[in-house]
Structures are given as structure tokens and as C-alpha cells.
Amino acid sequence: AYYRSEFFEEAETNLTLALQVDPRLPVGRLMLANLYMRQRKWSAALEQLDAYLIENPRAVDGVRIRETRTKVAGQLNRQ
Image (cartoon, rainbow, N blue to C red):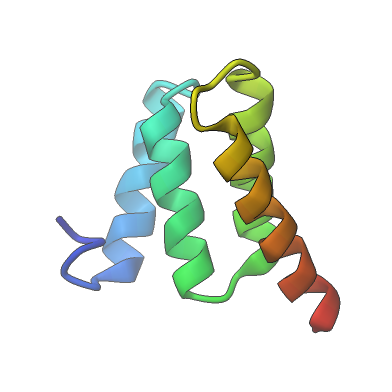
């Protein structure tokens, strides 16, 4: 709800807390990665995408996540 309402600080706090409670929460990792991408925090987004891919090597959306990761890495290299 915080993410959709663009309360990014609150969203980050709650998503981080959720991942502390359950570090293998795939949806939480992707939501946090999306939050960081919206904020242009490219290295933090990469960290979450990498963690997702490591924790979910056979994820149905793995190809799409890898494509997103490549785009985010490109943004980081432009800085």
C-alpha cells in the first residue's frame, strides 16, 4: 500500500522488515527492487534482483528478471 501510494520511505522500511522476518520472501525482494528502481537506486535494486535470482534459480519469471537486471546494470554503468 505504501509503495502504490508513493510513500517510498515507509514502503522501504516495511519491505525491509518483511525480508528480515522471512529472507526468502520472493515478492518482497521484487517489490523492494521495483521501489529502488523508481528511486533510481540502481545498486540497491541490483542487490535485490541478484538475491531473488539466487534464491529462486528456477523461477518462472527468471528470464524477465534477468532482462530487468541487465537494464538496471546499464543504468548503474551510466552514472
